[in-house]
Image 1 (cartoon, rainbow, N blue to C red):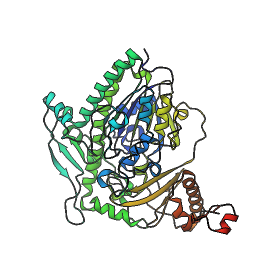
Image 2 (cartoon, one colour):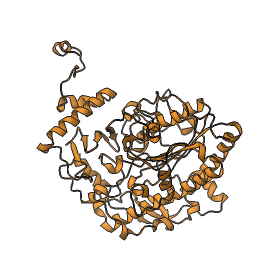
Image 3 (cartoon, helix red, strand yellow):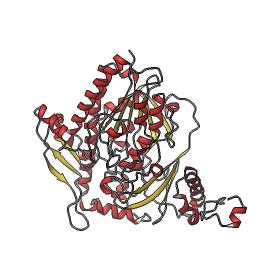
Image 4 (cartoon, rainbow, N blue to C red):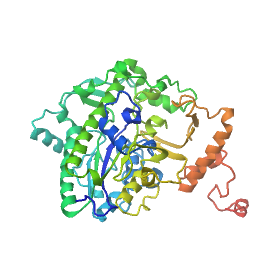
Length: 505
């Protein structure tokens, strides 16, 4: 029997990681990747090569997925752990896809990382599953400890810590460590086990009552620190790792905050061999997660759900892992943290498809709603990906806007990315323009280069127009500071300027 009630109501498995670079997957060209499961998903579904996060920070990106709204609109703009004075929870009347699914009769579950607000939990938004708070594996959580005890597995213990030295002389953030547990005891294995248990429950409802389901499996990794058992900590030989070209970053002509952030992440206090090891361990972390996803996919086949279930794989944002002499993510809108993996397999759609249109994590929301036969209009900044997946003609934007609001400190940025060029507006500092055809590693900021005057003006006006159209008030800064073309509105917001009023305010 079908696991969905009606052709338009598919089951949905939503696989999500945290802080995940696209180039860690074989499907995205990494020859050293150990990602057979995700590579198979790409080969049997659609791979999006220009898939972006709306903002490279966990909570705002995840809130955008939940609501289908850009961060400036939902206003949950920072992680709780580093909150710099923004909202800490979404409004109670906020539209979310999960509540819409519940109302439509779906089972709705989430296993793993939530991180969308402080007070309100996943259960408040209609998700089944254990509450697992925090930004990284909560290895002291009672449900995880009960899992270890039930299976006679040893507790969490680490050694071989990797960290640098902070500018003030203190120890840097933990970047990686060796885990003294077998794979079966890892938090990743535990999450996959709980997801399989939930899948078995939902499969019974699907087969017996024709009740469709949405199940999200959100891993906390491969977010740093990369804490792995021997099998994955040593999986990749660091000598085989090709360092990113942007490791040659000088920060010349770049916003000074980037150099400061490099110091915060202690890059220059560690030898280059350590960077190679960190990248190798990061890829090992991805391999561990791939293996656990494989367990879930096998369970889906065993339960007879594969033909009726759409499968997503993506993440909230990327990771530097030494690129631009940085770690983690932060106030720099490089491809390393904004372009991420995006895979989607829909029953009945062709496989092995590669799309180069600009797609976004935001677009998952409308896609989920459409797969469930629900009107996607409330997801106002989201657009269904199903036409692209089915190979249909679609009038798609030839650029994409991303935003950032701060982490550790307020830091507003807006970005416009098109085929060749990327423009970043930094009100506190120098703006950035990168020619991604000639400089894919974004090492040279050509914003002030005279030969780029036309590109700079065109993209500035385009970004300005898009921000105004969206209602993103960041555009006010641009009105007075840059050449944005003729302004047919009152830029003072006063309504008192006769000349502006007469000319079409």
